[in-house]
Length: 371
Ligand code: SAH
Image 1 (spheres, rainbow, N blue to C red):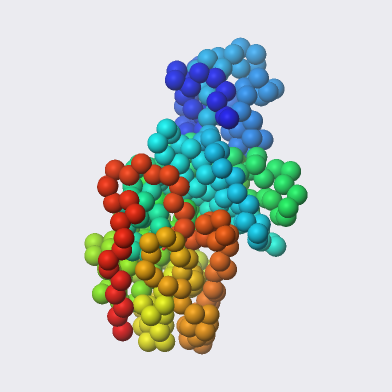
Image 2 (cartoon, rainbow, N blue to C red):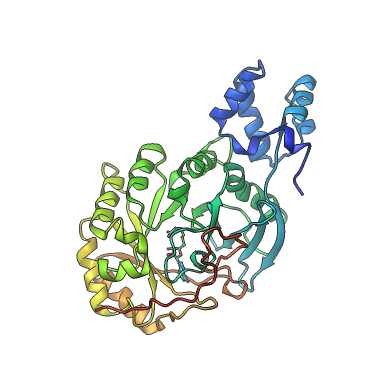
C-alpha cells in the first residue's frame, strides 16, 4: 500500500527523528531546516509522495525520489468492534504481523501501539507472550502505526476519530527495544510531527529497572508499570521478569522516575485474576507497597484468550478491591474492557509471529494462587 519508490536502494524517512533527518539533509548538501519541512509533510500532513512537498525545490524532490522513501507497514486486516474500537493487523515483513488498536472515548482517542513482534517476557496471563518472540520493531514500524492510524481514521464518521493519546501497550516490551521506541516517541512529542504532550504518551513496562532509569534520562513520558501482584512470590509466577527485578527494586526505580516532578504519578496496572491476586488481603498488601510511590492504580479485568487457564475476577471482587484501595486514598480506576469481540482488549493481541523461541501456544502449566 505504501511503497512509493524502489525501497531496496533508499532510506526510509519514517525511520528518522528530526535530528537524524537534519543529518541526512546536510549529507545531501542541504540546509538543516529542510528536516522540519519534511517532518511536517510526512507526519503532520501524512504525505508519502515527495512530488507533493511543494516547498522543496524541484531538484531536491527529484533527489529524494532516488535516495529516499516513505514506507509504513501494510494493512492486512481492519476490524471494527461493536463499541467502536478498531484493530489493524499490519504486516511488517513476509513472516510477521503486529496489531494496533484505536480506542475512541468521549473526550479522547487512544492508540495502543506495539513495540516488538511478539514478546520475550512470557507473562503467564498474556496472549502475546504465548505467541513467542521474533524481533524488535524498527522506528518506521512503530511510528508507522500512528502515521497509518491517522490516515485510516481520517473521514471516519463512526465516532471521535482523532488520536489524542498514545499508549505503548500493544505487543512487546517497549523498554527491551529502547532506542527505537524512544526515537518513535520523540517524533510523537515533536511539534513539527505529532506534537503530543508528555502526559498523553504513556509507556507501559513489565518492570525493566535499568530501562526505567534510562527512560528518565532520555524521554520523560508518562510511565505505567504492570505490577499485577503485591508479593514477589506471586509476581514471579505472573511476570517472570520479577525474578530478575523484584518488586522492591522496581518500586525504587518508579520513585526515581517521578522524583523532582511534583505532580507526576506512576500508573500501576493490575490484572484481576479470579482467585489468584484479587482478595482483600492482596489489596491491603498492595496498599502497603505503594505508600511510598506517587501512584494511580488501574485495575484490568482479565481478558480471556485461547488456552488460558486463568479466569476473570467477578465484578464484585473487582469492585471490592477498588474500594479498599480507594479508601486508602489511591486513585483507582477499573479499565473498561474494549473491543474484546475482535480480540483487541489488553493482553489479547497476538498478531502473526514467526516465533524464534519455539514456545508458541504452549499450554500454561503454572497457575498458582498465593495468600
Ligand atoms: N510489556 C509491557 C507492555 C504491554 S501493556 C507491559 O507489560 O506493561 C499490556 C498490558 O495488558 C499489561 O499491563 C499487561 O500485563 C496486560 N495484560 C496482558 N495480558 C492481559 C490479559 N489477558 N488481560 C488483561 N490484561 C492483560
